[in-house]
Length: 116
Image 1 (tube, rainbow, N blue to C red):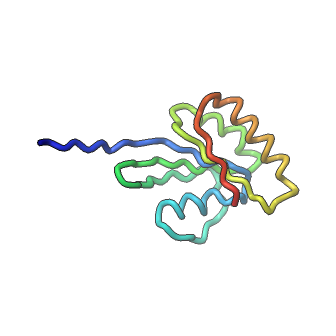
Image 2 (cartoon, rainbow, N blue to C red; image 1 turned 180 degrees about the horizontal axis):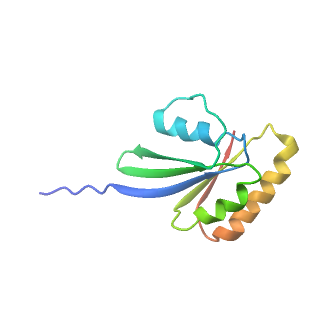
Image 3 (cartoon, rainbow, N blue to C red; image 1 turned 135 degrees about the vertical axis):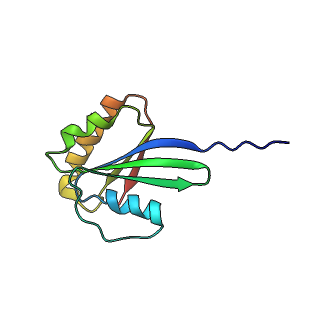
């Protein structure tokens, strides 16, 4: 009897406004603990492995000047994690607008919402 193991790979984007906690969540998923982070200018790409799944996770910066470029990363993406800073009530409307714009571009993709 031969056992075959599938080592599947998925591409995931982590999006949200600047300061929402995207990078903190990425490194929590990767190393299992909270690490000190600095604001992301551009993007971070890390590999997160869980059982037989390998996730290539793209953490995109959330500054106003970077958000228009998010759409450049949508193709070949299997899932999106959208992070909202639930304590930042002043920008919840902006976050909602960005989420709606993203969903309009993605169509029928998979999206997970994370409150941080």
